[in-house]
Amino acid sequence: MKTLKLLFLTLALSATTLTTQAAEPTIPTQKQVAGYYHHQIGNTQITALLDGTNYLSPSMFKGLSDAEKTEILKKYSAVNEKGIQTSVNAFLINTGKQLFMVDSGAASCFGTHLGSIYNNLKASGYQPTQVNGIFLTHLHPDHVCGISNSGKANYPNATLHIAKTEYDYWLSPNTVKKLPKDKQAGFLATVEKIKAALAPYEKAKKIKVFSDKSLSFGAVEFKPSFGHTPGHYSFKLKTDGQELVFIGDIVHSHTLQFDQPETAIEFDIDPQTAVQTRLKHFAQYAKDGQLIAAPHLPFPGIGHIYRQNDTSYQWIPIHFKD
Image 1 (cartoon, helix red, strand yellow):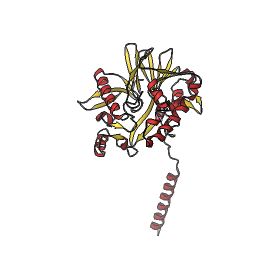
Image 2 (spheres, helix red, strand yellow; image 1 turned 180 degrees about the vertical axis):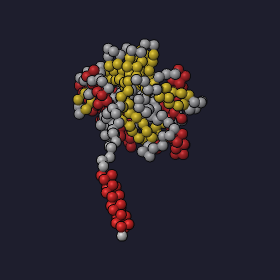
Image 3 (cartoon, rainbow, N blue to C red; image 1 turned 45 degrees about the vertical axis):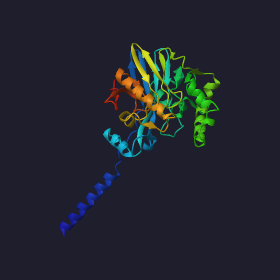
Image 4 (cartoon, rainbow, N blue to C red; image 1 turned 90 degrees about the horizontal axis):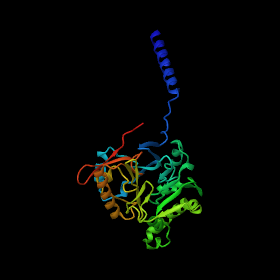
Protein backbone atom coordinates (compact mmCIF):
# COMPACT_ATOMS: atom_id res chain seq x y z
CA MET A 1 0.00 0.00 0.00
CA LYS A 2 2.83 2.40 0.88
CA THR A 3 4.50 1.50 -2.43
CA LEU A 4 1.36 2.46 -4.38
CA LYS A 5 1.08 5.77 -2.52
CA LEU A 6 4.71 6.57 -3.32
CA LEU A 7 4.13 5.68 -6.97
CA PHE A 8 1.07 7.98 -7.26
CA LEU A 9 2.97 10.80 -5.49
CA THR A 10 5.92 10.45 -7.92
CA LEU A 11 3.61 10.54 -10.94
CA ALA A 12 1.81 13.61 -9.60
CA LEU A 13 5.09 15.45 -9.04
CA SER A 14 6.28 14.53 -12.54
CA ALA A 15 3.07 15.85 -14.07
CA THR A 16 3.44 19.11 -12.12
CA THR A 17 7.03 19.47 -13.35
CA LEU A 18 5.99 18.89 -16.97
CA THR A 19 3.13 21.39 -16.68
CA THR A 20 5.46 23.98 -15.15
CA GLN A 21 8.06 23.45 -17.88
CA ALA A 22 5.46 23.74 -20.63
CA ALA A 23 4.13 26.97 -19.16
CA GLU A 24 7.54 28.67 -19.18
CA PRO A 25 7.81 31.35 -21.89
CA THR A 26 9.90 30.47 -24.94
CA ILE A 27 12.64 32.75 -26.27
CA PRO A 28 11.21 34.44 -29.39
CA THR A 29 13.16 34.48 -32.62
CA GLN A 30 14.42 37.87 -33.76
CA LYS A 31 14.04 39.71 -37.04
CA GLN A 32 16.98 40.18 -39.41
CA VAL A 33 19.07 43.31 -38.83
CA ALA A 34 18.81 46.27 -41.20
CA GLY A 35 20.12 45.47 -44.66
CA TYR A 36 23.07 47.72 -45.47
CA TYR A 37 26.76 47.10 -46.05
CA HIS A 38 29.54 49.70 -46.39
CA HIS A 39 32.42 48.96 -48.77
CA GLN A 40 35.36 51.32 -49.20
CA ILE A 41 37.05 52.03 -52.54
CA GLY A 42 39.84 54.52 -51.99
CA ASN A 43 38.20 57.63 -50.55
CA THR A 44 34.75 56.65 -51.85
CA GLN A 45 32.28 54.70 -49.76
CA ILE A 46 29.89 52.32 -51.49
CA THR A 47 26.84 51.30 -49.47
CA ALA A 48 24.76 48.33 -50.58
CA LEU A 49 21.09 48.60 -49.57
CA LEU A 50 18.76 45.61 -49.43
CA ASP A 51 15.19 46.05 -50.63
CA GLY A 52 14.29 42.44 -49.82
CA THR A 53 14.60 38.88 -51.03
CA ASN A 54 12.53 37.59 -53.93
CA TYR A 55 11.88 34.07 -55.24
CA LEU A 56 11.34 33.41 -58.94
CA SER A 57 9.62 30.44 -60.52
CA PRO A 58 12.17 28.12 -62.19
CA SER A 59 9.99 28.25 -65.31
CA MET A 60 11.07 31.90 -65.81
CA PHE A 61 14.57 30.72 -66.75
CA LYS A 62 14.70 29.61 -70.38
CA GLY A 63 16.85 27.09 -72.21
CA LEU A 64 17.37 24.54 -69.41
CA SER A 65 15.36 21.44 -68.59
CA ASP A 66 13.87 21.00 -65.12
CA ALA A 67 16.44 18.29 -64.41
CA GLU A 68 19.31 20.56 -65.44
CA LYS A 69 18.02 23.37 -63.22
CA THR A 70 17.69 21.03 -60.24
CA GLU A 71 21.20 19.66 -60.78
CA ILE A 72 22.72 23.15 -60.82
CA LEU A 73 20.75 24.29 -57.76
CA LYS A 74 21.86 21.19 -55.84
CA LYS A 75 25.48 21.85 -56.78
CA TYR A 76 25.28 25.30 -55.17
CA SER A 77 23.10 24.17 -52.22
CA ALA A 78 20.40 26.52 -53.52
CA VAL A 79 17.36 24.25 -53.71
CA ASN A 80 14.40 26.09 -52.19
CA GLU A 81 10.73 25.19 -52.43
CA LYS A 82 9.89 28.90 -52.74
CA GLY A 83 11.77 29.16 -56.03
CA ILE A 84 15.03 30.65 -57.35
CA GLN A 85 16.38 33.09 -54.77
CA THR A 86 17.24 36.60 -55.92
CA SER A 87 17.92 39.78 -53.98
CA VAL A 88 16.77 43.27 -54.85
CA ASN A 89 19.62 45.68 -54.07
CA ALA A 90 20.46 49.33 -54.67
CA PHE A 91 23.73 51.15 -54.04
CA LEU A 92 24.93 54.48 -52.68
CA ILE A 93 28.13 56.22 -53.81
CA ASN A 94 29.56 58.71 -51.31
CA THR A 95 32.36 60.69 -52.94
CA GLY A 96 32.75 62.94 -49.91
CA LYS A 97 31.18 65.83 -51.81
CA GLN A 98 28.18 64.15 -53.42
CA LEU A 99 25.92 61.21 -52.65
CA PHE A 100 24.71 59.23 -55.66
CA MET A 101 22.39 56.27 -55.84
CA VAL A 102 22.23 53.44 -58.40
CA ASP A 103 18.67 52.09 -58.75
CA SER A 104 16.11 52.42 -55.98
CA GLY A 105 14.29 49.13 -55.39
CA ALA A 106 10.66 48.12 -55.79
CA ALA A 107 9.05 50.00 -52.88
CA SER A 108 5.44 48.74 -52.77
CA CYS A 109 5.20 47.76 -56.45
CA PHE A 110 5.58 44.01 -55.83
CA GLY A 111 4.32 43.34 -52.32
CA THR A 112 5.38 43.67 -48.70
CA HIS A 113 8.40 41.33 -48.98
CA LEU A 114 10.20 44.18 -50.79
CA GLY A 115 10.40 47.91 -50.11
CA SER A 116 13.09 48.29 -47.43
CA ILE A 117 15.67 50.44 -49.23
CA TYR A 118 14.35 53.81 -48.02
CA ASN A 119 14.51 52.73 -44.36
CA ASN A 120 17.80 50.88 -44.83
CA LEU A 121 19.34 54.03 -46.33
CA LYS A 122 18.48 55.91 -43.15
CA ALA A 123 19.66 53.02 -40.97
CA SER A 124 23.00 53.12 -42.80
CA GLY A 125 23.64 56.65 -41.54
CA TYR A 126 22.48 58.73 -44.50
CA GLN A 127 19.40 60.86 -45.10
CA PRO A 128 17.25 60.81 -48.27
CA THR A 129 17.72 64.58 -48.67
CA GLN A 130 21.49 64.04 -49.06
CA VAL A 131 21.10 62.10 -52.33
CA ASN A 132 22.16 64.36 -55.23
CA GLY A 133 21.68 62.04 -58.18
CA ILE A 134 20.10 58.68 -59.01
CA PHE A 135 21.40 56.57 -61.90
CA LEU A 136 18.74 54.15 -63.15
CA THR A 137 20.12 51.16 -65.03
CA HIS A 138 16.67 50.76 -66.60
CA LEU A 139 13.04 51.52 -65.79
CA HIS A 140 11.65 48.18 -64.62
CA PRO A 141 9.51 48.82 -61.49
CA ASP A 142 11.87 46.92 -59.16
CA HIS A 143 14.49 49.57 -59.97
CA VAL A 144 12.42 52.74 -60.27
CA CYS A 145 9.41 52.45 -57.92
CA GLY A 146 11.57 53.28 -54.90
CA ILE A 147 12.25 56.84 -56.01
CA SER A 148 8.84 58.11 -54.90
CA ASN A 149 5.87 57.39 -52.66
CA SER A 150 2.25 58.48 -53.16
CA GLY A 151 3.21 61.18 -55.62
CA LYS A 152 6.07 62.61 -53.56
CA ALA A 153 9.79 62.28 -54.30
CA ASN A 154 11.61 60.13 -51.76
CA TYR A 155 14.83 61.93 -52.74
CA PRO A 156 13.70 65.52 -53.35
CA ASN A 157 17.20 66.90 -54.00
CA ALA A 158 18.17 64.22 -56.51
CA THR A 159 18.30 64.44 -60.29
CA LEU A 160 17.46 61.24 -62.19
CA HIS A 161 19.79 60.02 -64.95
CA ILE A 162 18.04 57.80 -67.52
CA ALA A 163 19.14 56.60 -70.97
CA LYS A 164 17.16 58.21 -73.80
CA THR A 165 16.50 54.85 -75.49
CA GLU A 166 15.07 53.50 -72.25
CA TYR A 167 13.01 56.59 -71.52
CA ASP A 168 11.54 56.65 -75.03
CA TYR A 169 10.75 52.93 -75.08
CA TRP A 170 8.56 53.00 -71.97
CA LEU A 171 7.05 56.46 -72.30
CA SER A 172 6.39 56.71 -76.03
CA PRO A 173 2.73 55.97 -76.88
CA ASN A 174 3.89 54.23 -80.05
CA THR A 175 5.70 51.36 -78.28
CA VAL A 176 2.59 49.49 -77.18
CA LYS A 177 1.21 49.52 -80.74
CA LYS A 178 4.16 47.43 -81.90
CA LEU A 179 3.62 44.71 -79.28
CA PRO A 180 1.54 41.54 -79.69
CA LYS A 181 -1.96 42.04 -78.29
CA ASP A 182 -1.40 39.53 -75.48
CA LYS A 183 1.58 41.61 -74.25
CA GLN A 184 -0.07 45.04 -74.34
CA ALA A 185 -1.97 44.94 -71.04
CA GLY A 186 1.11 43.89 -69.08
CA PHE A 187 3.21 46.54 -70.77
CA LEU A 188 0.70 49.30 -70.00
CA ALA A 189 0.47 48.20 -66.35
CA THR A 190 4.25 48.49 -66.07
CA VAL A 191 4.19 51.91 -67.75
CA GLU A 192 1.67 53.17 -65.18
CA LYS A 193 4.04 52.21 -62.36
CA ILE A 194 6.94 53.91 -64.13
CA LYS A 195 4.96 57.11 -64.76
CA ALA A 196 3.81 57.26 -61.12
CA ALA A 197 7.40 56.89 -59.89
CA LEU A 198 8.79 59.52 -62.25
CA ALA A 199 5.94 62.04 -61.85
CA PRO A 200 7.31 64.21 -58.98
CA TYR A 201 10.72 64.41 -60.68
CA GLU A 202 9.13 65.29 -64.02
CA LYS A 203 7.19 68.06 -62.28
CA ALA A 204 10.34 69.38 -60.60
CA LYS A 205 12.29 69.09 -63.89
CA LYS A 206 14.81 66.83 -62.23
CA ILE A 207 15.19 64.23 -64.98
CA LYS A 208 18.25 64.23 -67.24
CA VAL A 209 18.09 61.94 -70.25
CA PHE A 210 21.51 60.95 -71.58
CA SER A 211 22.25 59.75 -75.10
CA ASP A 212 24.79 57.29 -76.44
CA LYS A 213 27.00 60.28 -77.26
CA SER A 214 27.29 61.51 -73.66
CA LEU A 215 28.85 58.54 -71.92
CA SER A 216 30.26 60.07 -68.74
CA PHE A 217 29.19 62.09 -65.71
CA GLY A 218 32.12 63.06 -63.51
CA ALA A 219 33.62 59.83 -62.21
CA VAL A 220 30.71 57.77 -63.60
CA GLU A 221 30.88 56.26 -67.08
CA PHE A 222 27.74 54.98 -68.81
CA LYS A 223 28.26 51.48 -70.16
CA PRO A 224 25.74 50.07 -72.73
CA SER A 225 24.38 46.64 -71.76
CA PHE A 226 21.30 46.25 -73.94
CA GLY A 227 18.97 43.27 -74.16
CA HIS A 228 17.21 43.00 -70.84
CA THR A 229 15.57 46.26 -71.90
CA PRO A 230 16.30 48.31 -75.05
CA GLY A 231 18.06 51.11 -73.16
CA HIS A 232 19.64 49.15 -70.32
CA TYR A 233 22.93 50.65 -69.09
CA SER A 234 25.55 49.65 -66.58
CA PHE A 235 27.59 52.31 -64.76
CA LYS A 236 31.34 52.23 -64.16
CA LEU A 237 32.73 54.24 -61.25
CA LYS A 238 36.40 55.22 -61.40
CA THR A 239 37.93 56.57 -58.22
CA ASP A 240 41.46 56.70 -56.78
CA GLY A 241 42.77 54.31 -59.42
CA GLN A 242 40.07 51.73 -58.69
CA GLU A 243 36.88 50.72 -60.50
CA LEU A 244 33.48 49.31 -59.70
CA VAL A 245 30.83 48.47 -62.30
CA PHE A 246 27.16 48.57 -61.33
CA ILE A 247 26.02 45.95 -63.84
CA GLY A 248 22.23 46.20 -63.50
CA ASP A 249 20.15 43.29 -64.75
CA ILE A 250 22.57 41.50 -67.02
CA VAL A 251 22.14 38.60 -64.57
CA HIS A 252 19.38 37.49 -62.17
CA SER A 253 20.68 34.25 -60.69
CA HIS A 254 24.03 33.54 -59.02
CA THR A 255 23.50 29.84 -59.75
CA LEU A 256 21.73 29.09 -63.05
CA GLN A 257 23.03 32.03 -65.08
CA PHE A 258 26.63 31.70 -63.88
CA ASP A 259 26.79 27.96 -64.41
CA GLN A 260 24.95 28.28 -67.74
CA PRO A 261 25.22 31.94 -68.84
CA GLU A 262 23.24 31.32 -72.05
CA THR A 263 20.13 30.92 -69.87
CA ALA A 264 17.69 33.75 -70.56
CA ILE A 265 14.97 34.96 -68.19
CA GLU A 266 11.35 35.76 -68.92
CA PHE A 267 11.86 39.44 -68.08
CA ASP A 268 14.31 39.95 -70.96
CA ILE A 269 12.69 42.04 -73.69
CA ASP A 270 15.29 40.84 -76.22
CA PRO A 271 16.52 37.48 -74.83
CA GLN A 272 19.07 36.84 -77.57
CA THR A 273 20.75 40.22 -77.12
CA ALA A 274 20.56 39.87 -73.32
CA VAL A 275 22.43 36.56 -73.50
CA GLN A 276 25.08 38.01 -75.82
CA THR A 277 25.53 40.97 -73.46
CA ARG A 278 25.96 38.64 -70.48
CA LEU A 279 28.50 36.45 -72.32
CA LYS A 280 30.51 39.48 -73.44
CA HIS A 281 30.49 41.26 -70.09
CA PHE A 282 31.11 38.12 -68.01
CA ALA A 283 34.17 37.27 -70.14
CA GLN A 284 35.56 40.80 -69.86
CA TYR A 285 34.90 41.18 -66.12
CA ALA A 286 36.41 37.77 -65.36
CA LYS A 287 39.50 38.54 -67.44
CA ASP A 288 40.01 41.95 -65.81
CA GLY A 289 39.24 40.83 -62.25
CA GLN A 290 36.62 43.60 -62.28
CA LEU A 291 34.81 44.42 -59.05
CA ILE A 292 31.07 44.54 -59.75
CA ALA A 293 27.86 45.41 -57.92
CA ALA A 294 24.63 43.68 -58.93
CA PRO A 295 21.03 44.38 -57.94
CA HIS A 296 19.91 40.75 -58.14
CA LEU A 297 22.81 38.76 -56.70
CA PRO A 298 22.79 37.77 -53.01
CA PHE A 299 23.11 40.81 -50.75
CA PRO A 300 25.31 42.82 -50.65
CA GLY A 301 25.71 41.93 -54.32
CA ILE A 302 29.34 43.08 -54.53
CA GLY A 303 32.07 40.74 -55.74
CA HIS A 304 33.90 39.24 -58.70
CA ILE A 305 33.16 36.89 -61.58
CA TYR A 306 35.43 33.84 -61.84
CA ARG A 307 35.72 31.87 -65.07
CA GLN A 308 35.56 28.15 -64.30
CA ASN A 309 35.99 26.94 -67.90
CA ASP A 310 35.06 27.88 -71.47
CA THR A 311 31.34 27.88 -70.76
CA SER A 312 30.79 28.41 -67.01
CA TYR A 313 31.45 31.10 -64.43
CA GLN A 314 31.16 31.40 -60.67
CA TRP A 315 30.10 34.29 -58.45
CA ILE A 316 32.72 35.19 -55.81
CA PRO A 317 31.26 37.60 -53.21
CA ILE A 318 33.54 40.03 -51.42
CA HIS A 319 34.83 39.06 -48.00
CA PHE A 320 33.39 40.95 -45.06
CA LYS A 321 35.39 43.99 -43.93
CA ASP A 322 34.74 46.07 -40.84
